Length: 547
Ligand SMILES: [Ca+2]
Ligand SMILES: [Ca+2]
Ligand SMILES: [Ca+2]
Ligand SMILES: [Ca+2]
Image (cartoon, rainbow, N blue to C red; front, side, top):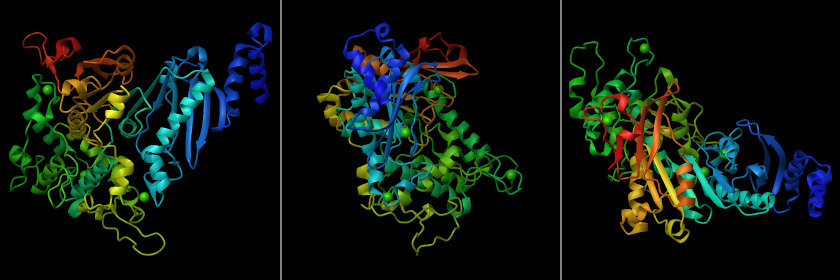
């Protein structure tokens, strides 16, 4: 194949046309792609033409390795299809594999992604971090940065010119990567789209562990999932529904539209102890779903969020309106077999491998067994998440790992001002895995630290969009679908900053709710026909205005 590439280059050098060389365009495309394997300053293991399943078009697929264990790949549209832009595609969860962005390749983006320096098939969850600082550094920030460097080099070689613009797009872990790039590598991108950012990485994992500890305490005495028919299986989430309805009763109408969405949860107050008093279990069981004192305590804990014994807030509590997502992460019940993978992904092994400077021990065999006696001696001592102490959070024992994984620095002078970068941040208000109020706090800190408190100046560089009723990176009862990249591209390349972004909610292919998401701190207010706010027919973007 090398000879084909060389032959192509030689003929190209002679200035011969396709017809004169006798080579087909397919031959030339293939040779140009495969020729990338000759690059000497990257370790490439593959370079071949691949078909994009989205539109059946050919593109150049490249795979490579960055020492010691980062695997990356590049999806390079054929030169005639390239839109001149580079995109680093963000990861999710703990990653550990190569992610494709075929839809962006179909739009002409040259895209790269890595495995973040570990293989999830071999080292699942957080276990890659067991006594492996290099893997943690690669995961924390190094893999994305070096993949971007490799991607830009491949672009220069393949298209024989630099990209016109560089972008980052990602949510969750990807959102953290976007924040990390803005803070640590201000020259990597012209624009960053960061959703539901896991930027406060240690804080949110500490909160995930603590939330579970509160729910699992005393053999699940405060669990909100209950056994409705005394058959020993926790089958009912009726209490979660009752709780959610109570919250809606207090908060839904505050935004002017009775639509079962809480657009401004921070302006609503809900006190479980008082507001659920009528749903407390009576002395004589009535058969209706009702709350015990222990369950009220769990609810209050989840809304309050973890504090250490000095009263320092480790991470914000759950936002009002997010209750229906609690079972997905924190409440063991029949539907998630007493411990969904997400629940265990968040808390099951983080404290074993990714919090302490010196790892305390491997995860226990069954993380759902809270009565398991850990083996604390021998070659592989164990550590149980149920034993983790929230007071360790500010003790200094996690400071090294915070410095590797966290992207909490609100000083974005280098990226936003020196490099004129643009940033779009978005977050669903019913996201209960990563809490939007933490992102709001970061954005306000950004205004203070980078823009001296001038929110209008901040909006020239970075904007936050909150999505009412949207869960973690999508889903939920509210409008949750929109293009996360095109508003950013329009801002970077045409100077058009998005005042609002239209998001839709689709059921069975039909749009049944639509709303402009507003640049924070504005919110979408109903301006349609008088008295029509509660009619779903009127939930269309044109009936709302950002105010
Ligand atoms: Ca990946
Ligand atoms: Ca470790
Ligand atoms: Ca049952
Ligand atoms: Ca509402």
